[in-house]
Amino acid sequence: MPIVVNIDVMLARRKMSAGELAEKVGITPANLSILKNNKAKAIRFSTLEALCRALDCKPADLLDYTDD
Amino acid sequence: MRISNDKSLLLSRVCVGVFAALLAVLVAGAPWIWPYVLHRKGVVALYVAVTYASALPAGVVLYCLNRLLRSAADTDVFTDANVRRLRAVSWCLAAAALVYFAGGLFDWYLFVLSVMAAFGALIVRVLKNVLAEAVEIKRENDFTI
Image (cartoon, rainbow over all chains, first blue to last red; front, top):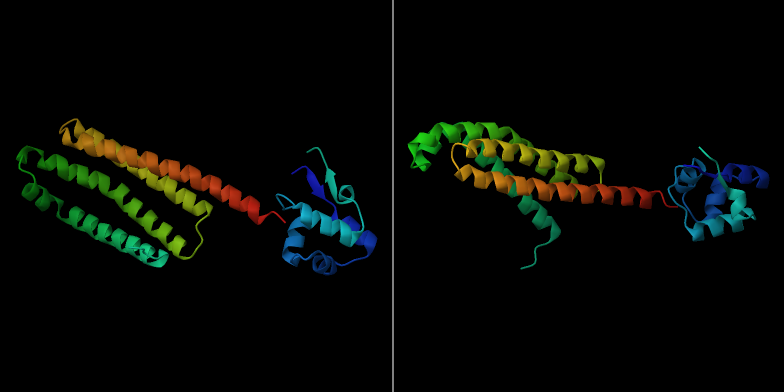
């Protein structure tokens, strides 16, 4: 999929662990792992909003488009 | 009368078992059953041959139906395996329709069975297409975070 989720980058910038982020966002670590590994087929606006709030960033900081 | 899902599943599995037993009896006793049932003695050999030729597809259909019901009992319905099973059922019915069609060249009664089997194959094929789409939708739902 050409949409890439850059959660790893933001986690490193905010010096936050994946478990901590999952807890703040209210999703399971397994689902966060699906997002991190670009296995997700879609992301809800509510999840994106919670991610942006927890990581204090914009959606564009988390999502990127790469031409395959 | 309202039948619960579990009882309905059980009833379906019992029916599959009954048909499997019928198939076994028919295969084992075809040379004796057909002369007893048919009044036109000239076509007995044809009906015995058609029975044996369609026994394998019928067995595969019953096996697939049993596996489908088992997966339904395990509440694991929307899987690629079940799509494959429905596809197998559809092709087996199509194969049976071909056998009956060939038999129908010698005895036109078998044409009726051929049309019925072909129509059954079509219905199962449509169900297979619908299930394949449902599996894709479920996969997308499962990976929507």
